[in-house]
Length: 166
Image (cartoon, rainbow, N blue to C red; front, side, top):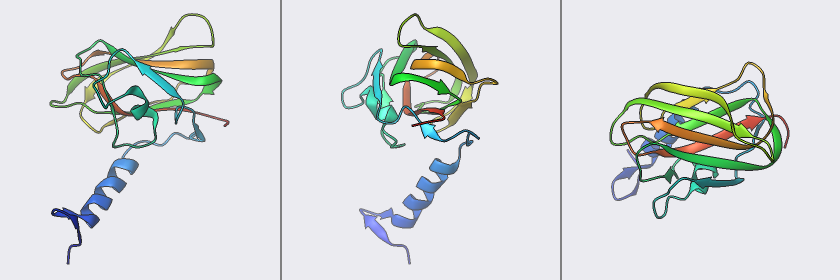
């Protein structure tokens, strides 16, 4: 017998879907701390109710939604300089999948942003994008993810900035 939570939603189906989404991503060997969680975020634009901090709250069902086509960016202030070992990004790309380009920028407490990496591939809603540099990025306080090409308006479910430490 299928247990219904409310209005026809299957509890087991929802739990299975959540487990799939949370585990269907690569895990960093250095996944010790997500420095972005509950840090501070700002963005080029956002729709009402879809603020930038929703992309760093640890909830993979909330999102930052720019309500604009590229170029758009989201920026995370890690509050202090960190050593970054990996970036994980969960994209929301609706209504259509397609080729996207995202530039990851970083900077310390002062100075200008420096290009750290470009992700360019075919993506779709709910997909995790992952990048682990050959050598960790040191002395980074601000990470900016700038989407420069996408068939859809720019939105992220989750932005994770990973590394060692607290």
